[in-house]
Image (cartoon, rainbow, N blue to C red; front, side, top):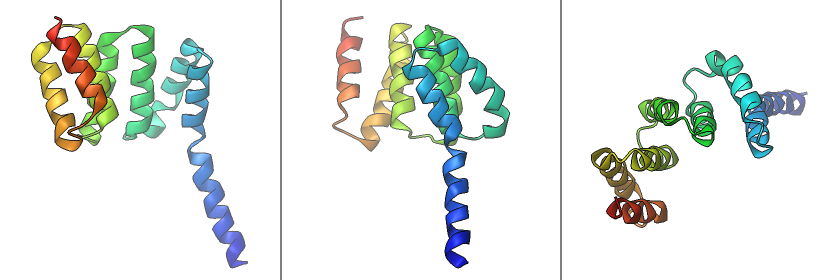
Length: 130
C-alpha cells in the first residue's frame, strides 16, 4: 500500500509538467498562435513559474515581438535573477534593438555565473559590429 501512495505522488508530479510539454510540442510544430492561446489560458495557474514565463517569452521572440519577449524575460529574471537562458534571450533581443548598455549588463551577469559561456561570446562579437 505504501508503494501505491508513492506511485500516486509521482503520477501527480508528472501531470504537473504536461502544460510545459504541450507548449514545447506546439512550438516545435510551429503552431505559435495556438501555443500563445494555450499559454495565456494557463498563465494564472502558473503565475510564479519561471519556466512557463520563459516559454511564453520564447513564443513572442519567435513571433518577432521584442517588447513582449523582454517583458516575459523580466518576469523570469524577477523570480530567477541568474537564469542564463533568460539573460541570453534578453541580451539577444536588446542587441537587435541596439541597446548596448543593457546587452552588456546581461552579458556581465552571465559571465559571473559562467565565464566561458559561448552564447555571451557570440553576443559580444555581434555587439562590436553595431
